[in-house]
Image 1 (cartoon, rainbow, N blue to C red):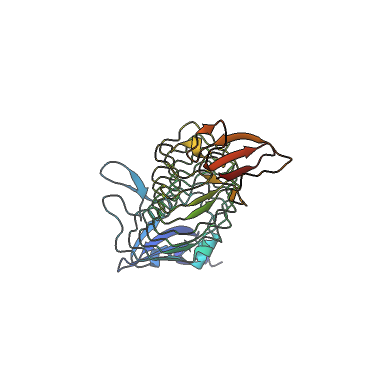
Image 2 (cartoon, rainbow, N blue to C red):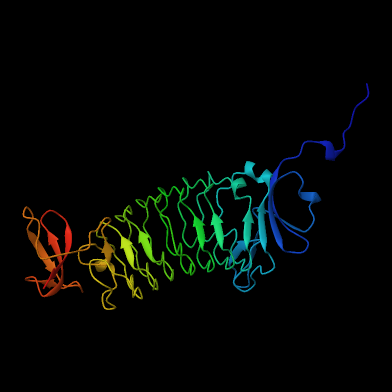
Length: 330
């Protein structure tokens, strides 16, 4: 009986996830197939790492602080990659200063990903990111996810499920060009760190954080620092945390119950009664007449100082029915 022997190449091969940098070094492509050996360019396994001279560890295909990947202009997720299930995508695009577009993000299945920290950090030429296809239900850390994406003007994260996220520090730090940010899907009930979350977002004019739950947050230092164009933060609750140094420093146009005061920049001003928050649906300034069924419980000046009585000019008044009014006494 004849024994049939098949060549090794004809035998079943296992799929593997890998990254290819094109021969001209301008394109990065992510694959999950059996064709790795036939790819031209520089090829790395998805788990490969490298160290810099200070022994810091990076993914093999990314840049480093001293040697950014300056030639790469485009990244692509091949259709084959949709069958791969990474458990972490942290730092996947770290230090790509000239990366202008990422195609095929719908082929990146993030349903099992737990770490997204610094995923796009220092992508200084990206102007638009649509992450509406991302499943973030398992993610626990998003710190520095978009940090230093200085030219990012459009960011779609409206479908983000953040119920398990604990780390949001520096998430949007130095997103210098962002003028609008929709965080309506965010569930922050598990978050413990929001320090420098919006630090340096110098073109944001408003933020709606009315649904933010900050009960577990321990750090808020520098959270809004340097947001020079920020005028309104919508939030109906008072926040508290252990560390809040310079939380509002440099928010010179911010005005809530009171206008910005450079001497009051910590978490004590994170409230809609005597601080920089604005209640959703606030009606603005009222006259010195009040609801006959509500009495005045507390009076504050516009810089947050408690008063014994209404003074001439603008007063911030907390009523017995739970509302806050801006009352102008002539």
